[in-house]
Length: 224
Image (tube, rainbow, N blue to C red; front, side, top):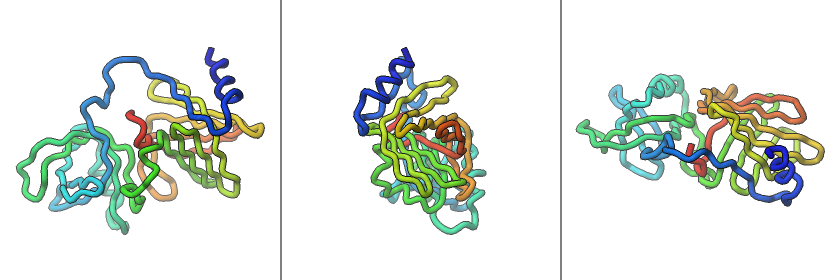
């Protein structure tokens, strides 16, 4: 049945057809009751503070999910630019001076310098974002399909099929111009080899069997 579904997706739909996502089993979602947020991190008097995008409020970070965010943030010390973070957690009150409460952090999706993440107009529409180097490539998926950009290659905009592989792993695949393109994603901490940016997913871009490795994360349209 999966082979039939793949054939239907690749050959029966128009070029710019919407991407297809398999439904997950029913049951309580692991992120229930937690908020996905983006903003900036700063360190004041030995405490890590989170300031949501387009807000003046600042919250003391309580790493209740043991994400090691303090150690991760320390790797950017001395580098220019603001520290952008994409995370999930919940808010609670705090009596600490100079803060508007406490952020109980459970998960870090992305941590990087000078990303422009707070002003990215496409983030909320994207489901998966991945990139790598040697040569440079960028992969972005949304409900309208996938966009693949590669160094010195034409941009490809195509429909795709998603397959869940177990253990939090999944793949996005498509075929066009006699090319078989797959993005394999796994829940594994990944550091960009060029920028040092942190992602919560590792990725492999496979084109006709040739593999290029990189990092990935979930876009704002995906509630994982």
